[in-house]
Amino acid sequence: MAKRQFKAESKRLLDLMINSIYTNKEIFLRELISNASDAMDKLYYKSLTDNITGLSRTDFSIEISVDEDARTLTISDNGIGMTKDELADNLGTIAKSGSGLFKADADDEKAAEDIDIIGQFGVGFYSAFMVSQKVEVLSKAFGEDQAWLWTSTGADGYTIKEAERDGHGTTITMTLKEDTDDERYSRYLDEFELRRLVKRYSDYIRYPIRMECTEAKLKEGTEDEYEKYKEVKVLNTMSPIWKKQKSEVTDEEYANFYKDTFYDANDPLLTIRSSTEGAATYTALLFVPAKAPMNFYSKDYEVGLKLYASGVMIMENCKELLPEWFRFVRGLVDSEDLSLNISREMLQQDRQLQVIEKRLEKKIHDELKTMLRKDREKYEQFWDAFGIQIKYGTYADYGMHGRELSDLVLFRSSFEDGKYTTLDDYVSRMKEDQKYIYYACGETPEKIAQLPQTELVADKGYEILYLTEDVDEFCVRTLFVYDEKEFRSVSDDDLGLETEEDKEALQKKDEENKNLFQAMKEALGGKVTAVKASNRLKSHPVCLSSEGGISIEMEKVLSQQMNADNRVKAQKVLEVNTEHPIFEKLQALYTDDPTKIFDYAELLYDQALLIEGLPVEDPVRFSNLICDLM
Ligand code: ADP
Image 1 (cartoon, rainbow, N blue to C red):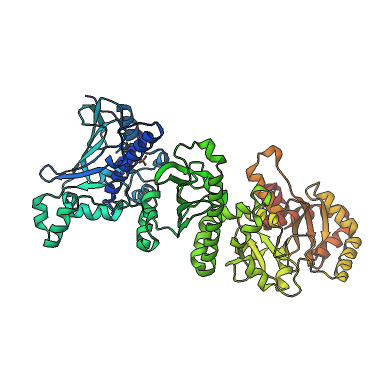
Image 2 (cartoon, protein in one colour):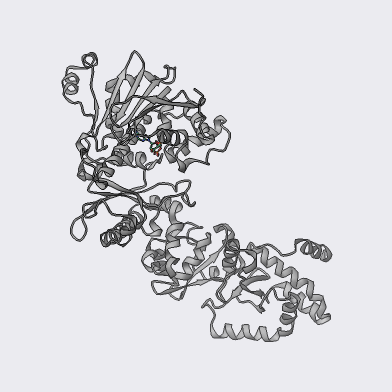
């Protein structure tokens, strides 16, 4: 029979698995057990929704057995099974979520990174190849008469042929690899070792995992072990981790559960357990990951919590349970109030679900707040991973949730050379005469600190928030105030610093130089809406500021998002430092011959653009102008 080939990405993944440098090979067991458990969940769920009689939850189980002579380890379930097509589809391609990520070549250095990818997506079934030279899958789908045998020795493809099997379900038989110096594969034939592994990784599986200990094996153990294992044939305690008393579960067990269930190689940053009764009865087990998953900012990422109705999973990713700004939270909710037959459409309107969502939202918020208060370092780690999502929340829905989320927000600031601060801390440090919360935008704290626009505010000894991310300015502009203090950009026309005399003096300067400024504006041909005397510059000759609702930073962000036709432009103002030596020159030139200042106006404008981190419009002309002057 001709061998079928694996789909391209699967093949590459399979290569990785077979030649795995992954140290934690033993996880293949929990992957296969978890697949078996899913298959039984599916059938049980079907039996309830389709009213199939003759299937009882207590009939489901997973059987493990070994044959030392044949070097085989077998895992069998009586779940929903697979048809011939399903065998080809499910085991011939890698889980959809991971596909496309395995394009790079499989040199060894790369492989280390790939393993990380494997950790992230959980490759499930394929992990069997880390320990096996041959894998056979005998399966009969529920309701079918014919069973099928899928066989593969790895990368060279697989075969499927007709076979016999009693009843529905799947039996996976692995012929283990020969032992090497680095790995004793035969340890997976050791019943005691298998018991330990099941206990460690799969204890919470809600169906019994059974294994008969052979008499010979029993005799190898101590007397205690003999007695214990003779009796105990079910290896797991079967109670889902979220149903246990808090005190019964260790942090490590929660972390393991998280890693297994959500395919993350790292421990969660935060684990939240919450149970309530009353208006809604539910248990929730939630996790905040330590890092954003690789696909977090892509549309591949599936938002939502697993939803259980009285212990039966009814939905893999229930989006309705999380607000958009907490979309990074993973976990599950188990509620007695939900019906098993509930459809997606009905769920959206389900009042019970809305109550749960509101409570979870509050709970997550409170827990994050506690972390911020008690473990700042950890919170900053969280913020680096998911802060953008929270900031996004402050301006989503027209800023409806801005106020409630603002106590979670961190910004970098000038207070400690660009370290993070909360808005509360900023306000508590405000000087007595300080009216506004000042902010400045730029690429990095270092670059912002150098901006001419910050000089005046910094000189006053006022703290400046450093907004380094695209979403930041949208966030502060939508928040508008914090603790009754308005946010104010250092580029704003009115910084609230000038006395009446200052203002008058400035006006006078504008008056005196009216013609010069007008000529400069004309020279710039519509690039700026005004040229003005500046009161915020100390050592720099010029800077740009903006009038109207769109700032220069926002223009940068928006122009990346929109196509060239409907670009939004900030109304730019060129501010001139009339105390700067350059200005005297300008005045002299202008008096001599007004046309002489045209080139200078352009140069100064280009300089201001560069300082802002904006591109000069005509670099060649810019360079020629400089050469001419030199
Ligand atoms: P995942 O479990 O992440 O979807 P796997 O590679 O582990 O990825 O499995 C691929 C698919 O094969 C599963 O989604 C499931 O449909 C099917 N499958 C795997 N093991 C079993 C099993 N024991 N019984 C029925 N179907 C299974």
